[in-house]
Length: 251
Image (cartoon, rainbow, N blue to C red; front, side):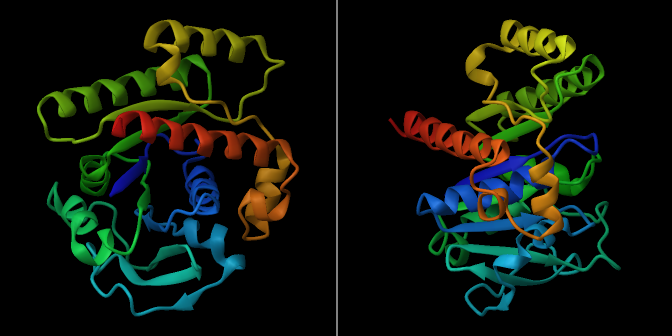
């Protein structure tokens, strides 16, 4: 079971946009995907709802019963949690290994190839449990100096937890988002990331593209809304890269 956790303790870093488009893109490659939305705004299902929103009986257990109302079927290969936005509390107590055990349990692991987790932009028990469950941790960030400071702190915390075996992740990467290649500051900060972390730790960038926002407004992944757009191309290439990373780890 591969568990991809998308995390950044800062809001507005395209976490949800990335989760929605990774789910659709990886499903296009034949993967059965379950999306877990731990952000109490519940926007993941909003970004997928144009695909479908059917009740299902395949999965009956949930790791945070007070947080989620149900798990729904968006399409044949994508299922997602539905969040109770009026009651969901991102500071609700949860054991560090609770989500990991749920993902690894037979009910989930036998029916899905991947779980993708969206996380709250706060240091909360849910965020820590999501990071603990992950086999892959992706930190989306705009290539700016202030954003880099937050990335460095989260990277250090994750690395320490991996060394202490509190986290099981084998892949820890940065995803540049909202990149404008024409901006010198973006180019400089990307270059700094390559030098500081290595090119293999920085994923292919997601460029700023209005079609990504339009797609979300239409409740669709970018590949379903504007498959020929720059945003669709970027997320297609990212999915290919992630599949390649997984194959390298397995070898």
